[in-house]
Length: 295
Image 1 (cartoon, one colour):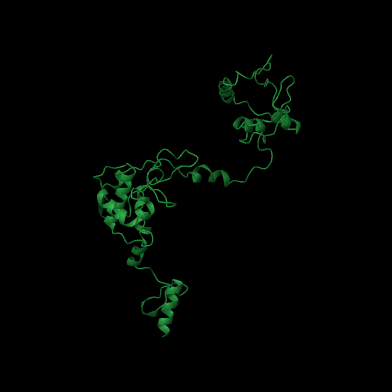
Image 2 (tube, rainbow, N blue to C red):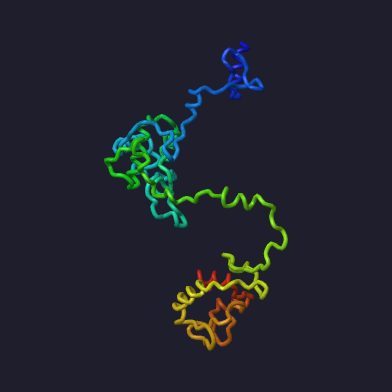
């Protein structure tokens, strides 16, 4: 009874008891893991192919396995069902505000696909697929993303020949070389620079300090681009020396001036009301108005 109790406690705590009841280790706990026990946990597959088992699977076989085990959540064509994620498509969307991140558009390594399916799928019945079935499902996903032909057979032998579209889309972690040496030194706290000046402006245009002591450097490229865009505005507005009101008011000196305050121009009632409330044209207010001019 005592031996059964000890084995139960060991199982709960994850502490192995040495064969024959002898305790091992400096604290009298545990033992060296057996090769078979290590192999049972050593399931990962790496980008260089280390860990891949022998096996093969075709697109055709993968479609059958996918329909039987995965399509209820991911759709017959890996397009996704309801809130379950799509596994195909999305190419060319990673620079969008709402990118579609799929196996074909986002995942950089095919080994990640194989490893995840092998470990975790199908949902609710993980690790029930054979090695060949995992190869087949991965082949079908490649086909669903237009990366292989319909007669393709994926195997350990040609696994590394498949290059994922986003393989070069991730930034290499070079912090150990680029940052750690710099931040491992004592920080400078006083007189760190001979001259302090603003060379860039914040994305929010009204937070960078103004005045003679904090004048930002002029971004000539941005000014040139702005002049090109302003060409569309010249039909209604003039700017610069000698500018006069036309269909719209002159915009010379508008930054810092009251809204609707240019002498000699008849503003809309909405603009007059906003100006009467004390609003001043700052760079931030101008940016907001130009993005959505509804006053």
